[in-house]
Image (tube, rainbow, N blue to C red):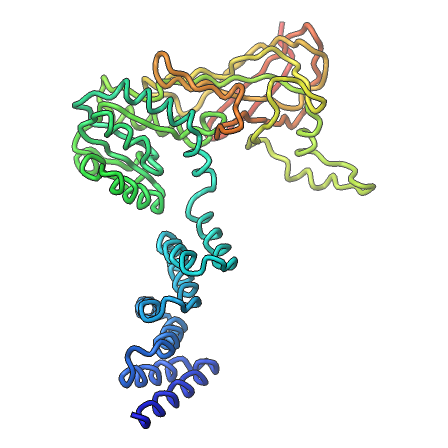
Length: 416
């Protein structure tokens, strides 16, 4: 027995030197020999896993690291290496699952917590949790779903995320819900959540974009009701228009219903120099930084913490106006061009358009972002104008709003 133990120790020492010298094939052979003598030795299994990893024997390395954790759950580095392997294989769900186990095992380890956070951000944008915590949003969707779902309904939930809306529909009595989710991580999360809540027999999660769904393959028939919440703070930024257009043409019955039924996007012109500075720099602390303006672009709007009550930071220059009304009860156009005459109520310089929306869940249920509360996920949006426009009280100016995958706004005098 003493001789046996001595041999194992010598093999571990020999293999460790081979590993550190990058002689990975020799190290593998040495550790496999040692493993025959002592198959449950934690060090041998760990070093063998490391050698296999270097040799790109990924599946074998994963099995070896799992064995290490099974033998001794306190080997911290085995969790880290496992998560790295999964991450490089683009199996981010598995990487996050391993790091969650590590977090439970090593609760005070800040490095593990940091790694878990980094992987979590790669799996899905961080706005999902604040969105799910918006109780007002959740409640109004629940009310609309409870009101509109019928017992025989085949429901399609587009962009199911956590599966929340799909479960609301199942609870409301839908015959079956097909919940599609393009993100693989979220699709798997939805399956787990739906099973946890006891709805796995009434909800099918499909890991696809809705535009890739095929009747007769993914769905047994066209659907009676569509649910979706794929709206950003200006309604269209998450691809809502082409998604709903496709659904109406390919996935829904002619007399289908939809939640939400429509939306209205509003705006006002505001004078807001600090927003304008986000897109234009000149002198900064005595230095000319104007070449940085090459980065200025009009293709995105910012989350606005401004509101319609004037402060020292901004002034409201126009009356509120409608940018676009959307009717989702029929196939919407994937793009649009609108012109709006805007009455100017204060003299100043229009630096940006402050936007908000009303989401029409049903005939009598409306969620508005005109005056968002601190706990609301959706907020107003600020579209900064690349060319600030002078405004004079009492005149009208024209806003041209164009959308085709992105917004383009132009402000000009009203032509006589």
